[in-house]
Amino acid sequence: DTGVSQDPRHKITKRGQNVTFRCDPISEHNRLYWYRQTLGQGPEFLTYFQNEAQLEKSRLLSDRFSAERPKGSFSTLEIQRTEQGDSAMYLCASSSLIAGGLEDTQYFGPGTRLTVL
Amino acid sequence: AQSVTQPDIHITVSEGASLELRCNYSYGATPYLFWYVQSPGQGLQLLLKYFSGDTLVQGIKGFEAEFKRSQSSFNLRKPSVHWSDAAEYFCAVGPISNFGNEKLTFGTGTRLTIIP
Image (tube, rainbow over all chains, first blue to last red; front, side, top):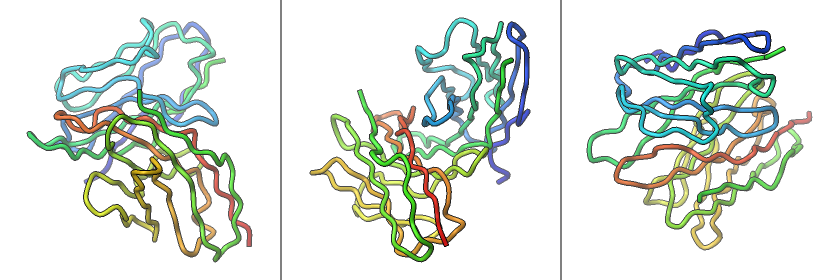
């Protein structure tokens, strides 16, 4: 069990550029979540996948944001036309929901810190 | 809608002293409850969780938390803190549903400083 990994760990970009982040969940975890954390705040939910299906998106996820999990393994989060307000830590988490079960613990990766200049 | 309140933004404790971090939640039924810890620039590490059963749960690094339904609280405690415990602590709530945890709602965090 190597844990959740995220790449890159840091990204600096200029306003208006597109950026893409990658998340590799714990192997065989069928659920994958994206959160955003701004300075001094707790993480806020953005979206989650069960296998390759995107089941819920937050209102925080504007049209400039898109997430995919094409084969039900790794996921990407793309931000188009970045704005300074997008500067934040983007956290990925994964979990394993056993069919018929209720207990479901999310394990987090180290995050990708985005700075938009 | 579910919400979490961590009333203490910053707490300073002497090394070796006891610690209690407060967490209050708002939810229509019994939720899933979690405590995570975050070191500067890092992701979140799970300390402990409550799903059901015994209301006093034990976690890693000597932490424990007690679920009190009547007070809608899930306070985190440690009898003797170590300098390495300095970090940001987040309480989180997740809904109980037939589909599992789904999204977590986090509090704003409590920053813990340890003084020698």
